[in-house]
Figure 1 (cartoon, rainbow, N blue to C red):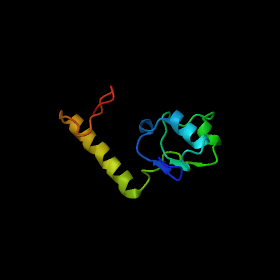
Figure 2 (cartoon, rainbow, N blue to C red; figure 1 turned 45 degrees about the horizontal axis):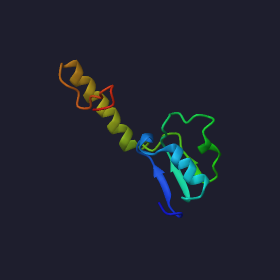
Figure 3 (tube, one colour; figure 1 turned 45 degrees about the vertical axis):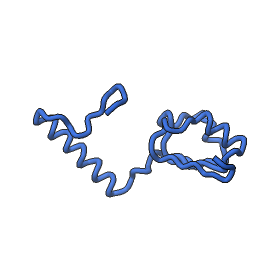
Figure 4 (spheres, rainbow, N blue to C red; figure 1 turned 135 degrees about the vertical axis):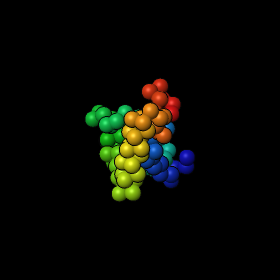
Length: 99
């Protein structure tokens, strides 16, 4: 990334190497970051990200729209109905990390 870049992550914390991001921000190799998700959630109190002046941190609220939350609730109901009916839920999560 170039020195004027702003990294924004609202997807998944694990897609960004936080140690590398902290280093890049501290050394001003990138301009700033806006984060809504973290490798460890909630973000630990001692995280260096909390002390960097060129970082904006949010408490994992990127999905907090009425449309998204409504769809999430409907999906949960669809999963529950499928499971209770003996069918495979449409969004079955694999505890090993797959789906």
